[in-house]
Image 1: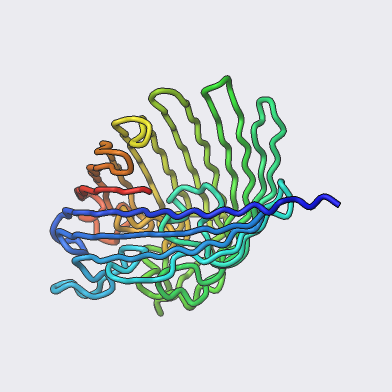
Image 2: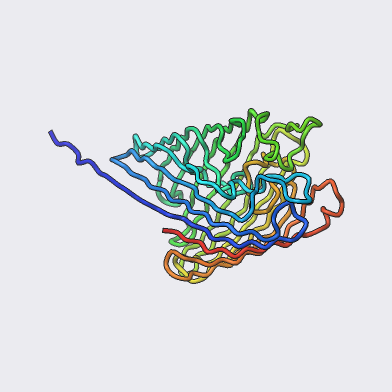
Length: 343
């Protein structure tokens, strides 16, 4: 009897960021901050089974969990601790068939959400299943993904639960153009144990607990053009269907170039997020606030050499839903210089 030969694989990767940040005075964070983060990971596989482990090692000049002198209370602004060493990934991935992928443990988000609803620093902790088919022709890929997770934040979240269902389709137009459509629904529960500093701008009751439910419908469209200078345009709209007001968010981005295939990469992002558009603990931390803000971000990257890119980032944002009228009118400026490494 013929016995198929076992196929082994091993991959090791390292991502690193060295950041210098300049912030406007008066914010609830340090005016100037420095941070170094290393994210190594390894994956080992045999046939259709893969095991992965990854770490997160960070050292920052600030302590983002402590109060700053002169500021009565500091919200946790980042979805990671400024100085820590922790396990970031620990998962088992199995492909029992070419069209099915199962994951368990702490893994990278398997759905291509934008940071409007899920921060790239966070990992779902639980189970996921993805069904995928490639019909051919203009429809290049169809997929369905389900994720069930608890306790997925870096900080104490009281084992907040998340159920996610998602469907996506990728269409090809000629040899160079791709359109991806993604529709997802996220439901968060068990919110009572969420760290008070992670409740951010979501509406709260007098006792500090979250006042609302978060059942978020999210739709993303990505149009890509391949070629010598790749271009991508992204549009994302989310709506908390459990509410009737202050419940919407918009994320729009455009990217041209690449620091891997090209010398330069330019990116622009605009976002407008209502206070209860999504559960603020889990969306992007780069714009200071979780929800309740409007902002612009420009990112210009330059490839120094293979695996190394230098980026300059400029941001302007306002706390549009602040209880203070002066905050709602004031646009805050922030700047960053980053050396990004990817092996």
